[in-house]
Length: 116
Image 1 (spheres, rainbow, N blue to C red):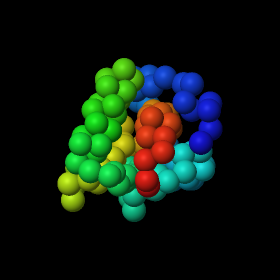
Image 2 (image 1 turned 90 degrees about the horizontal axis):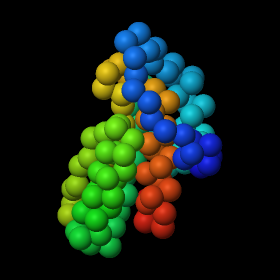
Image 3 (image 1 turned 120 degrees about the horizontal axis):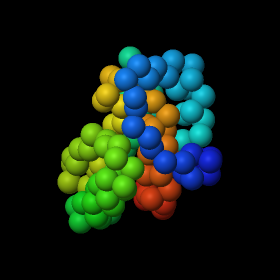
């Protein structure tokens, strides 16, 4: 993952902000290994598997704190008691922005050694 994204901050999307094209999103994906682009190109997604439920919830809580700091919030699901799925899209524009990849990079760094 590129440290440049980790060092950036999410910025609010102003009215008229253009979403990333599929090609731009695919370029950013190279900087956040493990994340995938949705079929419609409007979301990026990733799953993690943890040792147990408590580790999964601890990860969710760390992601929630990070999302609050960045003021950019993922959709989070906990399933099969120890798996966590994150989906990122910029709700204000209904598609992807650089913010999604900034947060993805930061979440990946936060996840560290968790099993993908």
